[in-house]
Length: 132
Image (tube, rainbow, N blue to C red; front, side, top):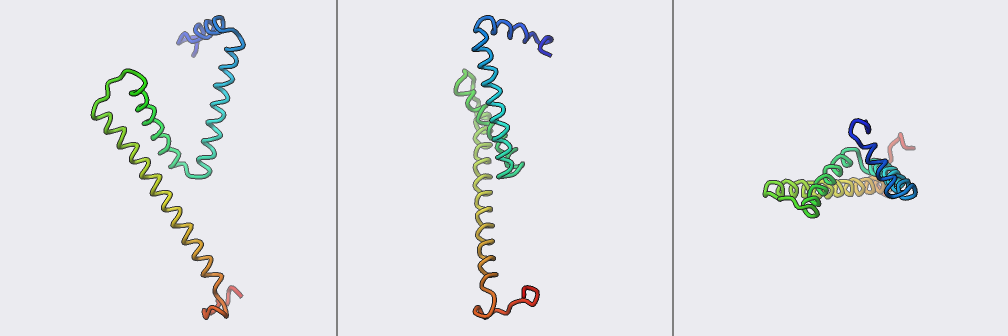
């Protein structure tokens, strides 16, 4: 594929212009960044969900598009601005609502645990036959 696009010529030119040390250093740095990104992705999916990872990916794309308007000389239309802002607001709202839902489930689980511990003779509540 590199031969079809002409990238092999650019690679050889970069190798000759900057030397082997800088060339391989940049290749290794790129590989390390890709490896780090994969580890972060696995942790994000492990601690949240695959849906949240997809939403975070959409937010990342919106940020990249928004930053391209800042750093490069591009014209920003009202429609583009509204789309970027709407996507960012939706991501923040989704994150907040997901966080609140997890907090509520955590509190309900703690209350349920306390209720189960308080069953028995001293609580005035009869204990189930199955739990004895």
